[in-house]
Image (cartoon, rainbow, N blue to C red; front, side, top):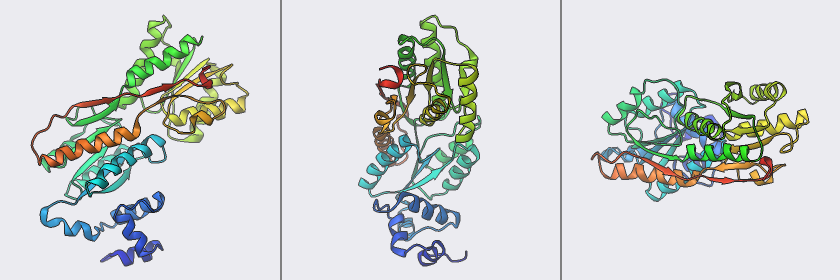
Length: 336
């Protein structure tokens, strides 16, 4: 599409020009899916709204990029809300990029942004590969980056994480103390930082209680709902664990579905605890025991750290890990 402008964008998407403008201005009175659709289409056609052009004189876009694996997940939704809160107060706009845990998408987004389109990037990593030079190139262009939750340990940057090891250790120990002796650990990606740390907490809790580690109980899942159902159905049918520690929220829900279909009673036959920021976790049947990360506060902290870097105008900052504490809520799913 040649010489694209807001009117042409509105016509192409069959959306009013006022809605298009609100999307670019960061308004909150617009459907999130609609906003994402508008911004994605604009990025695809390299369209920069007027506020970009008006800020070119001082070489600032007054825009931040937020790169996350997914948006539907309650954790990331809350974190984005925290980031947006700080950005709005600073008069900045936010562009959202979703990787779907696809490393190639992450590389493509970062390379696209490494040209002055944004003043800084806040991201939660996809966790693939060992070559992260595409991120190091950001420093050459004075584009600061702050990681949250899922980080790259080899990249020198400010990072906002939670006490995942301690939380995982405590969650596993809780299941052991309720009588579980065959606890399955559900994970999507063991290579990402949180996957490794959470699994180590699980392993060390077993060791403390003299329970031998069994690799068969590490259940590798995916981002596909139907595939996860098949994986978990086979695991519960054949391995028959008496406890489930889910490292991510959606795997706990998949476990509930499978248990319902197989007639497995939670918590009598199987106890479940999971990382989850879902507000309705207490309303599930049975109520889900959760390790709940302070997602909104993590977003606030990540954005605040990024603005600290922007305000120091390239002066080297103390790029360290900032650890926030999660809370464990014991409910009926784990015998609480």
